[in-house]
Length: 159
Image 1: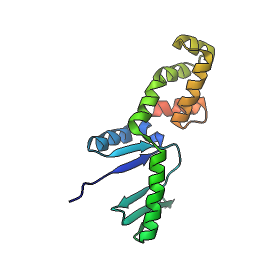
Image 2: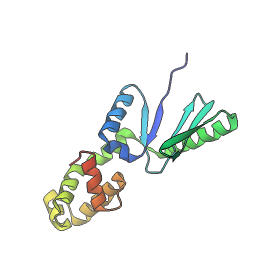
Image 3: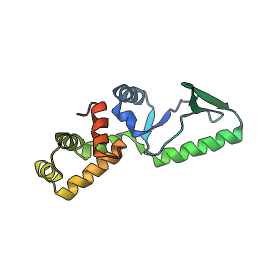
Image 4: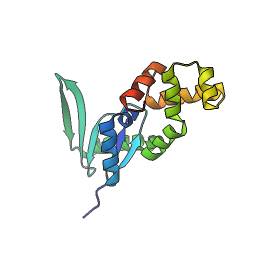
């Protein structure tokens, strides 16, 4: 009997939802491989390289799914998944990058409402470094503004 391989790709937001973060810990503890991507991806399940289940749009609050068994189509979907997998970042590296940025400290400074100069001084970094880390943190959170970054951090229980 062949060993089962589970590989999942998520958007960064999954890390900021306590229930989904717990799910990630559980599946990785059981051997699943998880990667994080910044790119929008479609929910897809591939079974034994023979069947693909592809999520459709939500219509009337219900999500439809299409089951595909055509070998050529399944192979094409597998190729797309493999490309997305290789472009994504493994979960541990992604989480380490978040920690490395001093994310909690930066988020606390942002939440305090102080000016960048004051925050940089409080953290013992240059103004340029502080602003670069804020930009990196916003990218990591998938936020387009400092306010949105703060809101996402609060939702995730980071503040």
